[in-house]
Amino acid sequence: MTGPATTTPRPAPRPPRRADRPGDGRDGDRPTRRRRPRQPLPSGLLLPALLALAVALGYPLVRQVVLSMQEFGLSQQFGRPPSWVGLENYRELVTDPYLWKVTVRSLVFCLVNAGATMVVGTGLALLMRHMSRPVRLVLQSGLLLAWAMPVVASLTVWQWLFDTQYGVVNWLLTRLGGDYEGHAWLLEPASFFLVATVVIVWMSVPFVAFTLYAALTQVSEDTLEAAEIDGAGPVQRLRHVILPTLRPVMLVVGLLQIIWDLRVFTQIYVLQKAGGTTRDTNLLGTYIYRLGIGGGDFGMAAAVAIFMLALTVLLTAPYVRAMLRQEES
Amino acid sequence: MARRAPRSLRVTANVVGLLAALVAVFPVYWMVNSAFLPRNKIRAPEPTWLPFGGDLDNFRTVLGGGTFWDALATSLMVTLSTVVVAVLFAFAAAVAVSRFRFRGRTSFILALLVIQMIPVEGLFISQYKMLESADLLNTVGGLTLVYVATVLPFTVWTLRGFVDGVPYELEEAAMIDGCSRTQAFLRVTFPLLAPGLVATGVFGFIQAWNEFTLAVVVMTREDRRTLPLWLSSFTEVNRGTDWGAIMAGSTLIAIPVVLFFLAVQGRMVAGLTSGAVKG
Image (cartoon, rainbow over all chains, first blue to last red; front, side, top):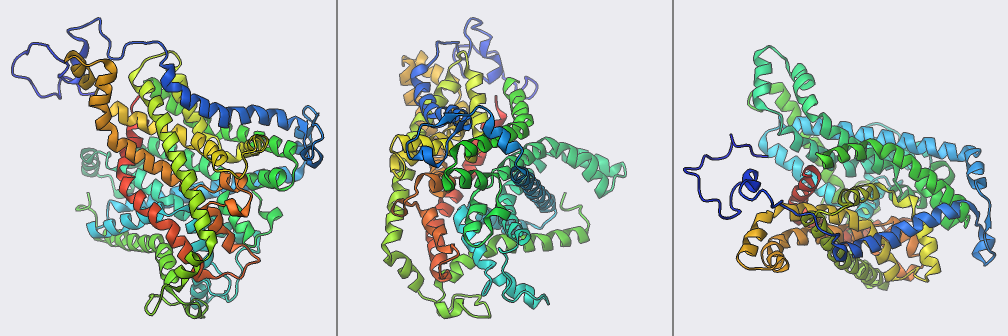
């Protein structure tokens, strides 16, 4: 808020007639009038949104909890009533080594992608300050373009770039001396995930770079200069002045990356269809899909989905808490 | 800052910057380039870097098949109905949250935040079951329903930032001049919100137009596919991949999104930060 010290001094106290003064003195002359009086719930305004959320998200959530405690397989699809099994689905899942494999795989994939995105994005944001103006503009336009691309369009282009026979990546790597002629990237799980990572990082870096670059402009030039006069080298200035200022923004952005990369579906699903081995490349999202909609075992799929929701809550809690603190202040 | 940087740092920064720009742009360029190349140049041991001697055959292939138009029609219907419904609902809710103080207001805002974090994959099984029992699978209405709920939290959140941005004092002034509260809102605040509404609508459009996961779940029939499903079906393993045509399709789908995105990007970032930073 603009304090009295920074507002332009007014020539004389004007008659406090209208609400045309800067924010602070709002209540000065009318102490009884609050800015936004407490009113009865504006239900008419809220109702449509609440209703839509309740129908499309609330109800399915409740139903999913119920479903996860039922035996709901193919025979139920054909009309047999589902039977109540309590926590049986969960017990079966927890003892299923494949679920843990998929979970660990999802977590590792998520952390690697979020980490790579953060490193590249932060690096670019820091370097942007030192680029000459035209180069920075070129880079920013390029990042904006990559950011704007629809997911599925970028996915198809990257598949074309990694194409076994005529892809540019194989051509380039062969040119550089590697033996990549006719290399099939999607066959091996490791290189399958490498391709997925390249696509995801390519798509996610612009958001990180732009957000952090915006935050960097908040770093005080005076403090930097003072640090330099006191003999701090570039590395020290980065460590003791720049990074501490960036920390809160980096935390939020990093958490968002983790949340987004844990729920990766489109890239994996499309690449699997294009030739990956499903069982070796499933992450939580595609696993749920294949169990339920693919395999017809809705009870088990619902249980895995609840498990995934719990995992998300666990990872999101710090972010929500930070936002809550902001909301209260 | 840049002036004081040593020369070597500046040179490194510039080189890295240009390389990064190349990596960022190249796939987009390659999509457009390949879209214009004839089959014999696509299937060649040496890549063709510029589309000289290219033609529109790939676009003709894409547009000639009826499947593109079916998918376009579905996509347009779903996207437009999602945007209209979501913006209307969200606008009302944003006004409530921004202009009224009521019990549960903070909880509502927080609920939006939490909902936004819910992964679609965590709910699509039961959403599928719900739509199935309501006979809404493979319908525009069914997909719109789940899209509206997906887009709403973000839309309310951003619109609230825009409504907050219009000082309440303006409305107060109009009320002192004799307007009712509703009149004051409609005549003073609403016109100032138009750009925010457009930006939010466009952003909702982009989200719904690009959405893939829920579309896979809800639109299981081939003739009900949206454009992203239509496009991704061409890279499936058992198809002889006609990369020229696929890139032409990608280009067609990407162009409106890229243009829209560039148009609203600045405003959205402003709306986002004001929504996120202000209480």
